[in-house]
Amino acid sequence: MIKENTISKEILTAILHGIDEGIHAVNLAGETIFYNNIAAAHDGLTVEEVIGKSILEVFPSLTRHSSTLLKVMFTKMPIYNQPQSYVNLHGKKIETINTTLPISIGGELVGAVEIAKDYSRLKMMSEMLLDLQHKIHYKKENKTISKGKVSYRFTSLKSRNPEFIGIIKEGEKLAKSHSPILIYGESGTGKELFVHGVHQASLRSSGPFIVQNCAAIPEALLESLLFGTSKGSYTGAVERAGLFELADGGTLFLDEIHAMPIELQAKLLRVLEDGIIRRIGSTKVHYVDVRVVAAMNIPPLEALEMQKLRPDLFYRLNVLMFRLPPLRERKEDIPYLTNHFISIYNDDMQKNITEVDRSVSSLFLSYPWPGNVRELKHAVEYMMNVCEGNVLTDKELPIMLKQKKKDESVTEIDQFSLRENLDRFEKNLIAKAMLRCEGNIQQAAKLLCIPRQTLQYKLKKKM
Image (tube, rainbow, N blue to C red; front, side, top):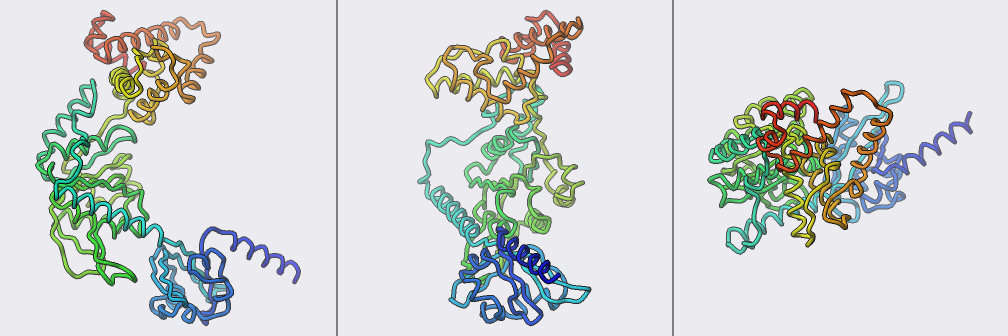
């Protein structure tokens, strides 16, 4: 029995040392009983310097009130994802995000364990990003920014789809408003281009335009990135403006707003309501004049049901709301955009590719394009890179589309159904007409000798 326990302890120790997170456990006296190599690397110490010693001895800047391990043993309540700054016995500043849990055996508290993530490097990257935003803003104020870099406008959004054209026109009209905007649509539908267009068509076009993806920054850093920091708010903190202050007089685009922590969404709501921000650790308030444009890649109602979006924030943002339809709902845009991308890459690659053949055109119209316009653009780019002739054919298709073509051909084998073969022939004929007319439904309908409404119905039903 002793041997089995010894083996189990050795295995457990090996597992804990192999985990890619810092793990630190203490007993009721606050003495370290387990400390893995990752934790030692985070803290700039060796395991031997910590094991068996009091946590307050090894980290003299901590107290019984500021140490998350000691606090958990006192309250007997877990703490999740809490930032902590402290100094080790060599004077090195450490910054971590901790999840700390009480350890109980048989209902009796015996200690606490902490799982720590080192976010010093992430914090440094966040501060570098803010510094970069400062420099860009400073250059813009002093008119030294390069004039050769043209921003996207609404004209950058290419479409033959009546619904999407209507959305673009509505966006141009409402861009003059100062109200916040919420945009949602699948990845690759052109949300960022649309927001660029809103900014350029707005009365703030001469002001700053700042973009932040809420899913790209750890939760603990996003608040300081947005609202800034005050000197002394944490060890080593400096006076630094956040993105709201940098965007003053302009537009702040918050992409994937549903990835923002719920608690932070409440602070965002307050800024939208009164235009007041307070840097972390400061008692002073700043008034900012910022238009917030938010975007999501899932429907807002779905985000509300999943509790990823606060209802009150949603109702504040959806004053002006736009849904960008996916490419599969804009069939006429597929041949039009295909030819547009061919034209662009002909210039870039110094090629003279004229079109895609009928087989590729038919495949493009039947393919669901889960990556939307972005996926179509990359598919055309790949095909033009490998094409040695003047027409894009099946041979140049990317792997995913080749597989789709292969699956379709397998389905066609030994299929003698007259209706299915007629449907297939009709789809190919429509694809050819749409390609020749570059997605213009009116012209394609004339070419096919059918009413426009009939062609629209067939495109939605069959393609």
